[in-house]
Length: 308
Image (cartoon, rainbow, N blue to C red):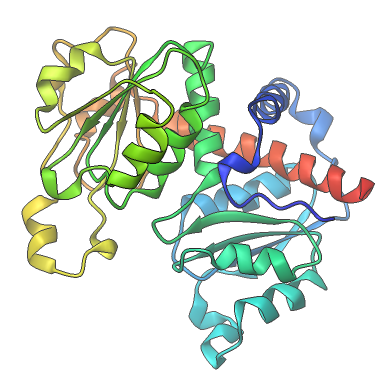
């Protein structure tokens, strides 16, 4: 059976460790992997706009010596003519060895995986899952902290709609010594089902607050997020909440010297550009890590497909 990755929980902790180790080896010895996917083709099916994720997948495949084909918006695909996700996946399987798919509807990549004849990687579905961003985040934490355990991780901003937040909290819940701090306006707080099914059921200590500056001294990781205009039904609500938290040098006065500041990007103005030169800013390192972890995932999935 062809294996796809639709949720970060599709991967065991041991498999994530293997991917992180492989990504680190690619970083250290890129020439060893320059032709690893020679003759293989990645299809990028992006029904929703993306810059980093789509280009990261493309850069990953090119870095492995492979080829890329695909589209970057639904209107440039047969979806505009009414073709189903299932038919698109089955058709594109005829032209490719692996598919990366982003879709605004939750569950669409699962439908694609059920009909594709090649591995499918979920590159983000609605406000639901974004497993390769989570793998990127875990690789960044590992490279900055040396381990993914015994850390206090703060999530700030849009915790209601942020699929990257939900995915990373799920992933971190499987590591020991993790404490979670949730910082958001009440209207954008973490959904109750995530708190119940992940934090409470797994006994993960957490704090929920609207007061950013009171908790920042405790954090090892600060994961900033933008308030996502595209997830709002009401423009007035977006405008009222979009500038709830802005990270600037003053707010970092009492932060740890080795704080790791992360952001899945794109940012709007929730992190001041003055922070970019701070050695604690890791969000552009995060972008680069995304290419390497996607290289590792593509390699492993293609290896499994070849054995199957």
